[in-house]
Length: 399
Image (cartoon, rainbow, N blue to C red; front, top):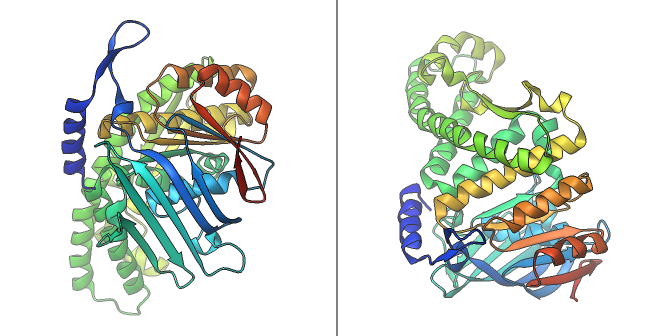
């Protein structure tokens, strides 16, 4: 989905939305009228799931079971149907059930126009991936990105705090690619040119004139990517701060600092000045592939100065802020996947999280927790419109 089309669709959806009074008497958009809802999924040979067909609530779906039984695998299957890849930084080859060379996913969604659409994804061990909508294949798999917007909160998000900038760039790229097809296309093209430039730098005598042309093409792509990342972070920061304050109830001030080589000037100039250095290193040492997004608390790096609870609260706030930005962009609520979100949060933070979910226009939600009693106690206070599932060994039972 290209960005212009997303805005056009947002405007159309806003016209169709029904305004209803909230609990404070103010009029608000009933975004649930237009959001895509996953009504049914059929999973075949995905991770530890042999064959499973499940019907879901349009509101909250709760999945319980011991660790390693398949809760996260179900959420990742849903993520695959939206993003055509895993929510985790793992290769597709790890998604096949043991001994199988193909997996398939089929989801039936009620779309924003009120009609149902079926989305199918199939992949084999040769790396061939096919995505279809209502039995019609996409011209390119990337054309599907953004059709079924999704946000996932997972324990693996901690890598955005503990690991290198690769994980943080991956997060920003995934969010912007869902909302902006032009961003995704520019990023893909930039990465192809970057690979070509790095390959030439490994040559004993690279063609300097050709590399100058390559540098100009990379610079033309890098500038709008840089500007969109900068604007995204500026929009994200106040929402993260607001959610963090509501979730933690503390006085800590959290922030996100965007770091980019392009603060120094246009990329073609940076590449020209670093050419000799790059020849020695045999790779490109300047560019948006080095961008970072530094998370801070009270001006200090969150990685070193935040407790586990503070880091978890920040990451939940980050993902909820992502959710708000995507909801505003699309005009309807994305699917929200909460994987073990209550883990490492004390009861005060869990209570605050509960209030956040209850007081906002959230759409369809999927929640996993190994503690069935805790999850049901939390969710039953939110709504009676929910579905419960238990899993053991990749087999799911609706209860």
